[in-house]
Length: 137
Image (tube, rainbow, N blue to C red; front, top):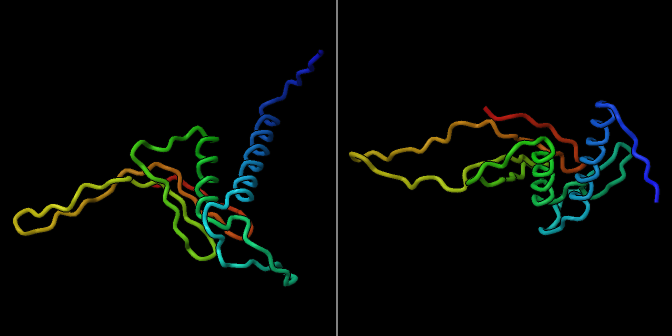
């Protein structure tokens, strides 16, 4: 058996990574049906209707996870990946799984403030799967 190895430059390697990432996103959006599909229907410019590409929160969570890992980022220990349904899109981000319990000191309720950030946040369009991402502050 003879194998041929093609050496690629950095630009072509980046294209291959993007292609692999897009394939992972499409697979996650297509095959993940752990939750009921969004009741929303999508409409093209000519009036054709179709089901959303990213119909469930679980699909959005898996897309987020795939992108975090492909970038070499980390899901911080003790964090959950939260997905908010914001109508036509999902908002996905990391948040501490447990917050300290409320305490009362001198008759005043102490408020817990979550600070830090630096993790990836994204919005994913339910209908076409497009996304925008940024790092939280």
